[in-house]
Length: 177
Image (cartoon, rainbow, N blue to C red; front, side, top):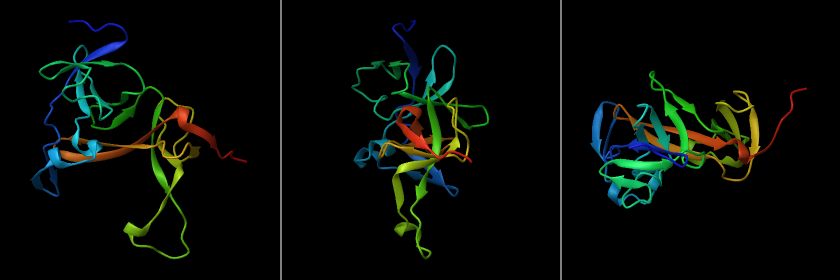
């Protein structure tokens, strides 16, 4: 089968988030009861024609889905709304199609706070991997509110998280003098 109309064929393990290993302990997850679809839905898939491992939006690989062809085979659009990153051989991620990786920026406090009380801005991020965008690692970007998105994925039975944002969501940045 060959995909057409700017789509790609991918296959995925629909149970990829059923268990994880944390600090050497393997845990069975009760994902079917989790209301956060980022935590419970598959996001890792393999491109059928190239074998590339891709990270996609959490609302893509489920059944019944408009992209589902049968078994573990999906025909998904090859666009920035669905495709976020590809997995490299060293297990690092490379952002795709205008996405970049970032971290949220803490709101300053006059005294040290425990982690659960630290607040973050909802309209700015610091670039950790610019991908193919014009931004630089470490650069502070101002974005539309809540335009960042945390991707939760499991590789080698280890849960990983990365925050991504798309370059279209950036509204400004600080200029170096």
